[in-house]
Amino acid sequence: MKLTIHGYSTALYATWYFIEELGILFDAGDGVCANLLGKAGKIKHAFISHADRDHLTGLLQFNQLFAGLKPTIYYPKDAGSFPFLNDFFTKFDPHNKGTNWQAIKDKAIFSVKNSIQVEAIENGHVVQPGLLKSLSFKVFETKRKLKSKFVNLNKEELINIKKEHGDHFLTNELKRNILSYSGDTPIEDYERYHNSEILIHEATFMTKEETNTKAFKNKHSSLDEVFKMVANIKIDKLILGHFSSRYDQHEIDNEIKKHIQQYNIKIPVHRIPVGKAVKNILAQEPIN
Image (cartoon, rainbow, N blue to C red; front, side, top):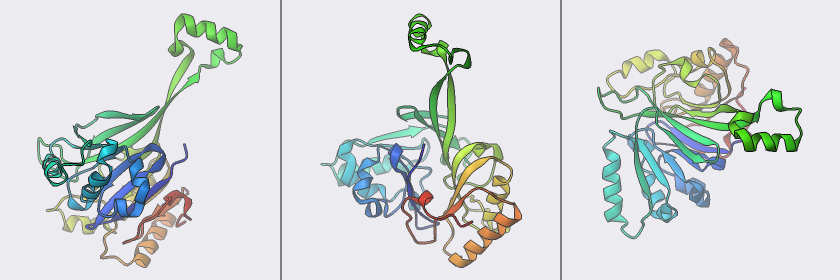
């Protein structure tokens, strides 16, 4: 499946990614509606990774403009900011009704359209024992393929077998991880994103040493850690974002190119420039 992905992601200020064909929004930082304009009305499912303000303040305008289209906003079950927002919106925009707010658990799976499911995965960005406050997400496409032993049968024979035994007797289920979105997270488990066709991953800092200096805060990933992980798993395309504005874009790009060479990365690598929204990210020239 070819995906059209629009996004903006600069640490501290705003992060959002819209997957147009799926009607899915991952995070909703400032500017999501201002950049997408009417396309924002295609958002049917908004998966918010956590309650940091740079990931949710775009919900104010989104709810005001599109509540009537009855979108669903999904959020970590113990992130208390979201019930507060729902209550606030009810009072602030009482005439705009229809948005469904849904608290979700680790490993929860949601069908968002035919053959497309989204799985929520707890991550370690916000660590409070016993509470779920931060999520990553994986998108799966499920199809059914005719079993090899039936491929030479004619149409009438297949119809008869299906009537007698059902579709599952004739076919195997094929499940593909077409996209994974890290949200804000430290690098925890390489296998989490293995076999993702597209991986959108944060790289707030350039080096692991810098992440260690912020250990008392919510945890993030560094560019060197992300590339080390990517070198040890199978993915088809990489989108990097959430860079800190402390870095010059030229410095970021040079570091990306250095790691591409160091780890012999052959897949296309895209990045979201600091302070800029990118439309149709995968249609742009990769940095390598």
